[in-house]
Length: 186
Length: 280
Ligand code: SF4
Image 1: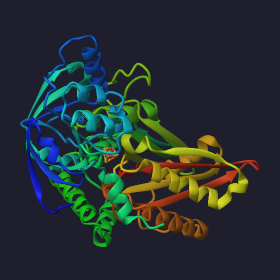
Image 2 (image 1 turned 45 degrees about the vertical axis):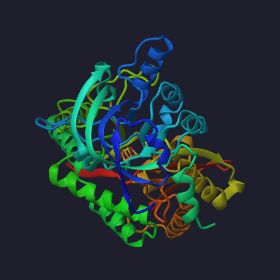
Image 3 (image 1 turned 30 degrees about the vertical axis):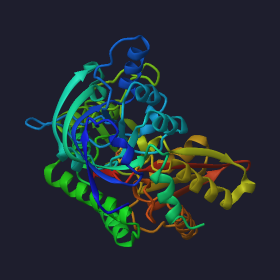
Image 4 (image 1 turned 60 degrees about the vertical axis):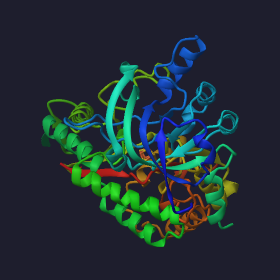
């Protein structure tokens, strides 16, 4: 952790991810697309069938979240991250198609870490279980695909200073590994 | 026989679901604050601050603490002289869940089958554990159990020779393997003994004990402390970013078992430990 906060614009500009390092604290502003396992399955099916995904993946950040329903007059309900490993079998395919960032919580499989290095992308963690707080940085929310999936539908979010931490960077750095080593007492 | 109206049970279950989604129990909040004071990792301390702030925002604005408002789990003790008039206890509880999750804008996270994955859209069926006890009251304990932490739970049929050391190794190993996935800091429920399914049930039941209250069995209290220390020495820390707070508590329940067996189950619960109780 450097102590400084890095402002990030999404979608990510060409080469923007190169300077991120595991442990960096970021605030993301711009567009995020939501998708959980059920949506990932359909996106990958679309890509495999040569069809267009529900949003242009290039340069984008996907947020692994299934929010609670919004109350009247609010953009979204509580909206913290879900466990990322459930998307591990799909993630490399999205990265290959140009996705540049993922936000979730928890460890990624080695194949995803390798794909991030290969396709130059990063994985961020948001604070799991802080859904009430996180929702304050989400300014608008619109379902753009797979509405039948309910909480798992794909949503386009506009966010301002969305809080996250870089877990895996393009060099293979991993804050879960280094953070833990620093504090473990054997 | 004491009659309790069907609707009374519906309302009680509804209220438990709605209230606990946004109101973190005081013992959990105290444990988070105490962990914050102890945490030496700057990233860990910052995360614990966010969790405390999240709990305040959730309570003040009546927003769900976490977007995963869980599977609705109930442990019900029904007095032998209490009877629900106008329907079954199970139906009443499910109706309460249906209404509570809808009216409080909670997420419906239940699918009708593990393979076809079609959402039931009302968060039913609830998981209901019913026990008959003396008396004429019905006590209902509720927990909204998140999927992320539930998925990291484990069960093993150890050999009696593996004993206490084997239990410690298995529990700490489960937390170690879970890493950042269950949203640490966590609460660890351990069920020891019984049969395959009893161990799992005890592990979940153990989570209901107030954090900070001692285990009534001194030998188990010592075991809990030892496991907790080993878990917090893993270094996983808040959200897995490194630190000395991986678990807030370890709670153990034990049960008689077969001469050949030593079942042990670990039910992992996240810091968003939402539970509440009502007695009718
Ligand atoms: S593990 Fe708990 S805190 Fe984390 S997302 Fe699931 S329910 Fe929320």
